[in-house]
Image: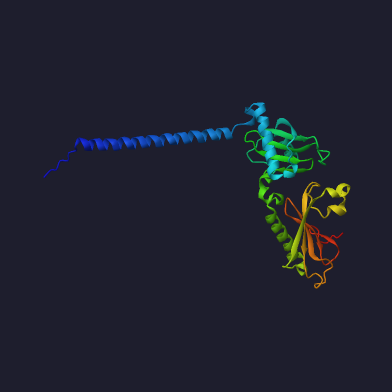
Length: 297
C-alpha cells in the first residue's frame, strides 16, 4: 500500500519561515566574517606602513615616541621629557660595508635587513647635559628601521650601546628600581645571603636583620678611570648607574667574635642585580671584589 504525505498550508508556511531564518543567520555570519577580515587586513597594512611614506611631521613624532618609550621603559635613568630631537635619514650600506671590512657578521642585526633598506637616526639633545654630567649633549641616539619601525641600535651617551636583539632581552620587570620596596628588599637580601652561603659559608646566618641604602657611582668622579677603583665595578657600569648596599645585621656578633655587628655588607648593581663588592663582618681585609675575589683594597 502506497502512502502519500501531504502538507497543509500552515506546514508549508512553517518550513518557509525556518528556511528564511537560516538564510538570514548565514548571511549575517558571512557578513561578520568579511568585516573581521577587512579589519585584519587594514590593521596589517597600518602596522606595515613605512615611515618614509608618512608626512615629515607624523614620521618625526612617531620616531621620537618610539625612542622615548624605550628609554622610559628600559633605561629610565636616561629618560628626559624636555629634549630636542634631530632626525636624519640614511640606509644600511655603511653598516654592511663596515662589517665586511671587519670580516664579520653582526649578530645584532635582523636577518631580514638589506643594505638598501632605509633607516632613521634619532638624537635626543638635552640642554642640561653638562649640569647632569652626561658625556654627550644628547640623552640617547637611536637607529630605527624604516619598514617596520623597529629599533636596531641605541646609544646612551658615547660609549654605552645596545643592539638588536639585546634591546629586546632587557626585561622591564628585572629593574630593581621599578619594583615595590618590599619585593625589592626581599630580592636584595636573598642575593646577599646567597653570596655568603656560596662564597663565605662561615659567615652565613639565617637570623639576620637588614638595612638597605641606595647610591650611584658619581662619587668616583675623577678617579672613575683609575684601575684600583675600576676593578670593583663591572665594565658595563656608568657613573650615573645606581647600586644598593645591603647590610646584614647580626645580634650575636660578639659571641661569634665578629669585628662588626653585621655578617656582611653586599653591594649590588641596580640594573643587573649583580653583586660586585662585599665587606665582611669578620674584618678580613676590608672590601673584597666579587668580580676578582683575590683583589683587595
